[in-house]
Image (tube, rainbow over all chains, first blue to last red):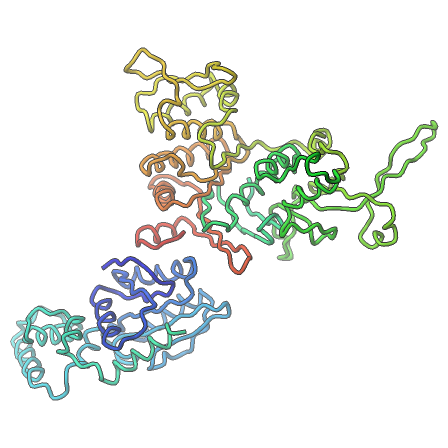
Length: 209
Length: 378
């Protein structure tokens, strides 16, 4: 969703779900409210926005959260060329704790590639990490989906399996139809999981400067 | 047309360099970032440092003092007024203290140097020596005292303002009250380029009648009528008539026999007439408009941009416009990127970074992304 922007630090995300998940996490962890979370409506538009954001009056910190999708190496290399053109010097490998670098002119960029800066996948894989350990429902969701796939009744592609899992799981909570962000707020999902804590560390390091 | 501009020491623009300018340049930025100052600098460049223009500028800003009342030395008052043109009002005598306004070109070696027609101004120390010529008459010889000499000859010098265009320069003496009256002097520096400067408060300019006379019965007259139709579609003709001491515009609408004073029809249509008359009178020169949006509804602004982009191309006018308005920027973007046209325009934002003015440029494509994705460029 479009927001009225209030801050000179921006976090660019691909979609509405990412935006609400970040808001819910920040609430949960009480992180200082000092950056706008911008729903760019897709990866292409997000890439287009980056150079323009750095031209905005007073903006010197921009964070990016994107999905690795099928090949995290490709995402990382396309981001590298985009940001090298903005005079950032980036390491060869994306650090697993997320990247925060400053340019010589004092501009700061942060990068987090979902789910965990290492695996292929997307936001839904990250949310999958937040399902409580040894959750019995998850085991049933997994076997049910497996059963559906065995009979070729699944209409989703295998790239989107994590979406099928998380939304099936959410649909069986107290209030069916709860989206991922609210699932955090309502505490269906845990937030003391290791990847989640690393994401919060990255956000704090990037924006509490 | 200026392809780039490099300004030094002009008011708050201590060093401002814009590497590429377009045909139509929209300038935005917070208060006190030097938007109007940039327009003034372009005007000084266009007039080749014309004294009448500079005097007008100083008077508009309240920098001309009435010497008799102030009980001050004439030279001192003149220096005080003129120093307001210089960054931090510094009365320096060094080359580095000069105001300079010009464009840049890249030499073969990748260095930048000023192009020939750069305008520069600085305070200088000089002496006037009487010389006896071979017929026995006396002439005055004006000698510029170079910086190092100044101390040695401290006893006997005057302070003047050196104005140069490229390699040609003269020293303006400041020991008379009406320094600006000496038209002949500035003429030596070359003919002023064609330009029109519409200030913030100019809804309707006194010179509109004269500008109209220049274009009456030419095809430009039709351009003016078409522009007025943006606001009043039934505009048929306009004319200027004598009323009291001035000439004012009247308008004839197609649906009525009466002729109406244009002033009775609101700020918008008067502002449009002012802008269009200035535009069609700036052929091969510069059109400068301070605060584009004044008096204009946002739907009107977009149509006016369309006229400005088209006519500036046709008449070879370079346009510089300032704005605070988001509507004005989005109308500009929409015309600039309208399909089927190849308009040349850009947005330039001036930022004040710890007292230094810096520019940020947005080309047509960047402006489109910003507008489509709702990113604030102001």
